[in-house]
Length: 488
Ligand code: DUC
Ligand code: ZN
Ligand code: ZN
Picture 1 (tube, rainbow, N blue to C red):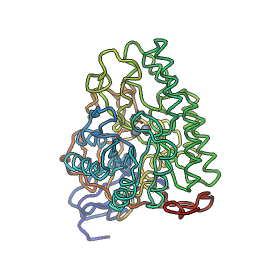
Picture 2 (picture 1 turned 60 degrees about the horizontal axis):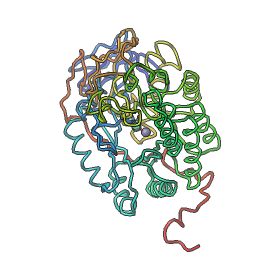
Picture 3 (picture 1 turned 120 degrees about the vertical axis):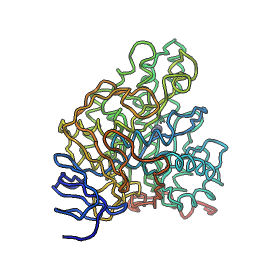
Picture 4 (picture 1 turned 90 degrees about the vertical axis):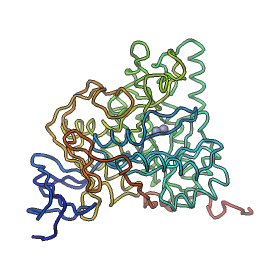
């Protein structure tokens, strides 16, 4: 038996990783896991985990926090409120966005978001860089340094008036990412189809929230996925397609992966648990369920579960995009806005894991190891956080959520710790809840109370991982060596 004085032992629980479940104690020394075994001691402090699961803390790889939209709307959460809410739901690492808008300098944008997170975060965090203005200065001067500093992923948009990049600019970003070994994450919907459909709906007086779903035709997802996959293959750059919502979208990713392309896919709880019918509620109630792309149909939900089971999609993140139902958020255009003037986005950092635990573990869909894989281990691997995050192993950060698998909780607006004021999952009862949450060995949540101080979360510098390496297997059709200054 070791004589090392551990700081903490979680005793008697069932440890679960993406590859198996076993009975063991887990000992923590300082910020990391020091031992996994039986009868570990001596110890300064014990947590009784009998009858509980000891899981890696969740990794939420897509959340909008303290972000200013292209329209100038600040979302409702600060880093303090968003990360607090994440921690209450068992998440210990979050990747949010540093959002460049047209005319802004990428390095200054990063500095500003770092300042906000440093002040408020109670769990660890990293940033994807949103690039809306891929100037020569941004791509050639700022981007390489920012990637070297640990921001190894980029997000770009194919829709939204002031964010969208045309195909040529998408290629510019893909090529810059390739040269600096960063992963490119994409919001892929066909902008023209959305704008065209919305204009016709509004002209006929169809303004209610439910028309948001019609204005984002499912074909706009399929078309954009196809175009994006084609562009990425052209320069052999790995991509992550965010928030897959349709059966056709998932099938397109499956085909690409079958061809050996490095295409990853993410979906979110809203696409697994909500449908377009949720937007069809009296008055503006449906606005609480509006996000982009919109939730689709029950057969799409089944297709997404199937895609998760087959490995076509590798992560489930929240896409937390917090807007209140008041003049600071969804109603910023007035008390009776048409669907085109209602902010898109749902809160989800806190309920992502409980909703998925209930479906995957308590109700048996896919099982607990896949739950851990989809919500912690795979996002950690894809985004360059593993083995430090997303796993329970010696040397990893002691990021642990102790789950009571029997605890029944009714999700309500009042239970949430974010600043949104509602949850689209209000009234659902789930079985299984995280009761104690550790981040780098610190107790962050215990006995229903927050124990960590704002600013105690740390920035996670991420080196570009193997996920961002070009395959070299197919393509590039265009030789990247010719990218700049070449004479053909
Ligand atoms: N979709 C949302 O619903 N909100 C934020 C951004 C996005 O792409
Ligand atoms: Zn998006
Ligand atoms: Zn998003």
